Figure 1 (cartoon, rainbow, N blue to C red):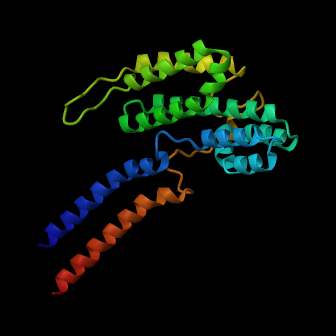
Figure 2: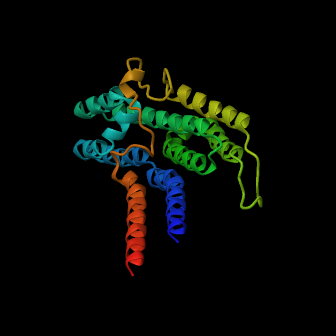
Figure 3: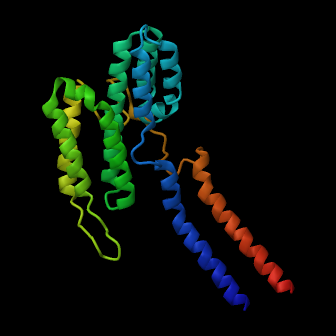
Length: 253
């Protein structure tokens, strides 16, 4: 009886442990159609389009995403926007924010390439990259409708290239990493040219950004500084404690 209980506890712990990365990832990526930095850009744009431009409100909105931008794009990106906000240069603020969004698209697509076989993760990342482009789309379309249409089509191709594991083999579709890489290049090359950027590499903003400045050694779901990433661990701990209490009480009867 004791061995059976211990085996059950071990099996439960093993299942929960294997489930933790998926749970944490879900909390980290959240709604694949939402991107905080893209949303902040839209809100800042609305405030700066007021008459007169509301730089105080735009500054507050920017402050809410400063930490995330610094983590992934470095101090240079934050400083570039902050300087223009302080100088009340509306056009320069928007230009710098647009370039940050391009880098965020690049970051998401690079992470897709690194974990290409992880369908649930890659689908969410592509969704976030696409949501970010939808924010930039009006800017691109205004001066280059053909490029805008091309990028939108390539995002469809990218989504298709991820394939589909199906459910018990039903609806299964093989992924195509080569197709993904080709579409990714078309998107990033087009955005780099359109927004006149020297580089769209992850963590680079302008010529002075360095890898050392932007490398944190953290991934989206293993950053335990985020409260949400503790939730799966807390759930696991509660389950273990519950099992221990239950088995202890049962033995005392």
